[in-house]
Length: 330
Image (cartoon, rainbow, N blue to C red; front, side, top):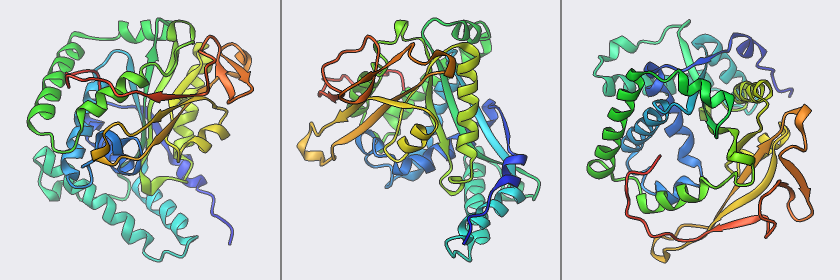
């Protein structure tokens, strides 16, 4: 049977800058997708037992990133009737006769959860056929001192500054009073390592994809590729390479779109009592076509490496770090 092409969905897909009002939807996508992301097994080991707290953590973290002058969020959405048609067609290929019912149930559950958290009645979230449904989002970070990062910082307002202070207070409250899902010592250790992902790039000036997340039920419809194209087009316009830390499930997608694996973070068990498996997180970099070779060079060991980075192997193990569990960047 021929796989149907979701061209109607892509033609109706709308990608726009996210607003604060989009953050509950973004956090829902974040929580749903990262239930299966292996790196979260390390610092969110109890997220499956407490899904609402994990959602609240994602909402808090996304608010904090949204309020940073270095970051911009994009959201991809499409009319509900087009989304349900595309998901039905996708699931029909594998013989799922409940595709429409299942999709509507997913939307209804998400709508009820969002209404509950926002203090709204269920009747206010009755789905409409032409309602725009959020399918995916990205969080882009302008790292280093580039023209892009200076423009973004120049747009930062006093209102944004106050919002960031409020987000930091919320982070402290969630971390110290509402936390049943996170292992913050592990998080601090991982964060310290990941902040060095792009050492070797001059000034660490690049466009960093912090998140590119498609809701699990919308994967395979071309939505993630459309969002990625926005990031790559921005890299081309600004003359920047684009970097990210990928899940193992996502690395082939990024390789097909021109990214090169430069090294891996190898996260090994450092607390035998917690039984967390060794995890390998690929660090990947994309160069604009007219600037290939500016940041990357071939390496006989791993295939590619960042120019100026250490040549002592292609993988980098994360050593256990002492942590005071402070309120570091999330």
